[in-house]
Image 1: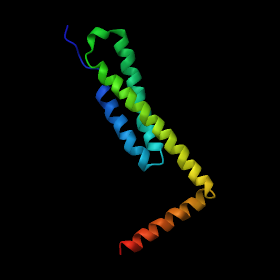
Image 2: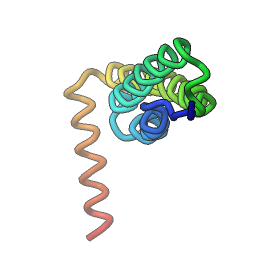
Image 3: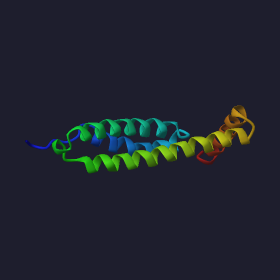
Image 4: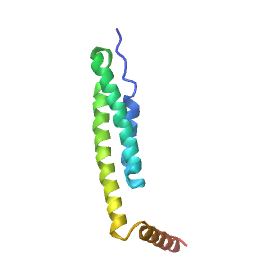
Length: 112
């Protein structure tokens, strides 16, 4: 019987890589979301592989996706915790948003 590929290996790998970028852009929440979905897909494929290992040929890609998803998950948690720390260290959400607005105003003045 011809070996087939595990169905979620490629998408889990792509989502794991996207989670690295999303960690930087959304205070860790996007990275948490993407790496969580990637890890869920990896565990589904691992369970499928364990039922019939001789049917599938790309289990190494699933292992790579699992490692990337776990690293992305760790970075997302770190980024989220750091963002929460920053917000509370400067006086809460309102002070944080005022600081963001000041930075945006300075940036606009420099680009005029």
